[in-house]
Length: 169
Image 1: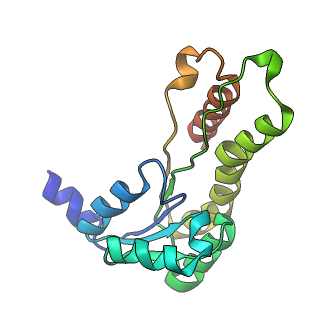
Image 2 (image 1 turned 90 degrees about the horizontal axis):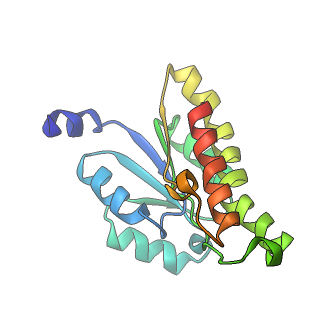
């Protein structure tokens, strides 16, 4: 069963966002070992040394420079002609703040990283997936919104929004 699943990945083009965070590297490693072509984006990849280090650590990985994953997705589509799997591996610190002391700019930054950015990159890739007859979009989020998380309303609500976005595709 595992062997069969791995052989299905042999000609798969995968894009992973925020590769240097959360489960980006382990996901890339497993997919590369299964034979997929893996592209990774991360804000750190604006630095050529960081891109080189990631590619050295994960042979076969193709990093995409720049911090805008929508631009990165366009580059991958231009180079490969398609993206079969998008892994929204978006990361942002879970800021601890009681609701009455939470700052608007922290809420906006949390939603930008965990909701708006994955929405935009998914929206950019879905048309090519539709043209190709399908694809997979994964959101690596959190169970925090399922029961709430005291003093982490910004994080839990953003993860809940991302979970709802995923369920709405």
